[in-house]
Every structure is written in C-alpha cells, then in structure tokens.
Length: 264
Image (cartoon, rainbow, N blue to C red; front, top):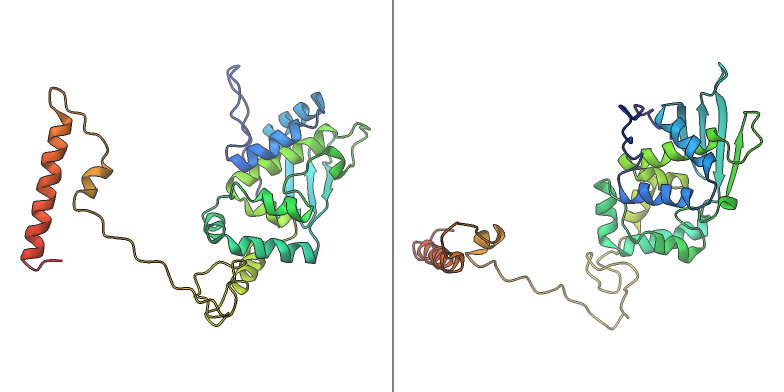
C-alpha cells in the first residue's frame, strides 16, 4: 500500500512546531518510539520527518519501505520489518474483532478502537512494537548508528500517516482494509446458528437448547427531551429551575394536544 507524501510542517518564528501526530493511536506509536531510549537519533529523525524528506512510503505486511533524502543527491532506501501475525493468529484476531460490534464501525469512521491492543497482546503479537529489538531495520546510508536519522524519520512519518488512515497499522500487521472487512462479514453469526439472531455477537454463542430473544425496545423519549438536550439554561436575573419546569410542562401539554388531535 503506497502512502501519499504529506506536506512538511516546519516550525516558524522560533515557535515549537505542531506535533507530528494528533490521534491517540498515532501518539501512542510515537510514545513507544521515544520510549526506546534512543535519544538524539530519534530527534534527528523527527526533524527529517518534519522537513518532508521521506518519499514513497509503502506499507506492506510486516514491512515499511521508503526513500529518504539525505545530504547526497540520491535518496537512501530504508526498510523497517516487524513480525506480522500468522494465519492462525489472524483467525483468532478476526474472531475477537467480529465479537465487538462497535469496532468495525469505529474503523470505518477512521478511528482505532482504544482496546484493540488487547487481542493482539493475547495472540502474542503486540499492536505496537514494544522494544527496538522487535524491529529489523536497514538503510543505505553510511551511518552505522541504529537507528540512523533516516530510519527514525520513516517511523515518525508512518505515525503521522496513521492520523488520517488507522487501517495502515493493520496493513502493516498483514491485513488490508477490504480483506479484513470481508473476513469480519463472513464471521458474523447467521440466524440459523443455534437459533441466534443476526445481531448476537460472535463468541457469545449459546447452547443449542437455549433460545435468545432480542432486547426489549427502549421506551420513547419524554416530550421535554429536546429541552434537556440543550443543557442548563443560563438567563441573568431569572430562576432557571422554575423556568425549566414551566417549559417542560409546556412541552408535555403540546405533546398531549398533538396526540389528542391524532397527529404523529
């Protein structure tokens, strides 16, 4: 998966530049990177990332590849490898993800569920690399330091791209968006599965002799719910409590009048 190149965000006028990552998952990734204790090398990479030196970042299963413009005319080729879940581990992950009905909705909305780290930890492949030794890195530059600033820049830019597309993190772990969604749809329970209704989560299957019924419908909102959603009224020189009670009573009277007139 090729990732578009972002616009560099450099600091101006001596002010501190905006953070490279703003979403919790991308901030978590940068926090993990900076927790490796690699000091100045990561900071030099951060400056390279801000300067827009990372080109043609590609995300593959267990691998990040990019070119980074250094002091030479030809960009250096960088590779960052990590362990991706096996087929067996991914089956367990997909079962766990299908059991959480809200996770797919969050991903489709461009958000990463906060507790997604749990199933990855359970199968033995962390969602975020815990140690620097979990990564195998390579750069074409003559610098023997690990990581060099070019490698660090690629990792920071990857964290920045995760802001807009959290699916890239799952692609790095071996599942593209469409393939994962298709698998989650296949893993959804069918009505014929021991009599379970289609809304029942995978992983919470009942015995064949146990029938389940859908939850009772929620009661309708009271007529004054619209008023309650506005929050506390702030009117100078007035008793807001008394006013809210009067308005709530008026709402109920209006609703009763509509029902009496046969209006919906």
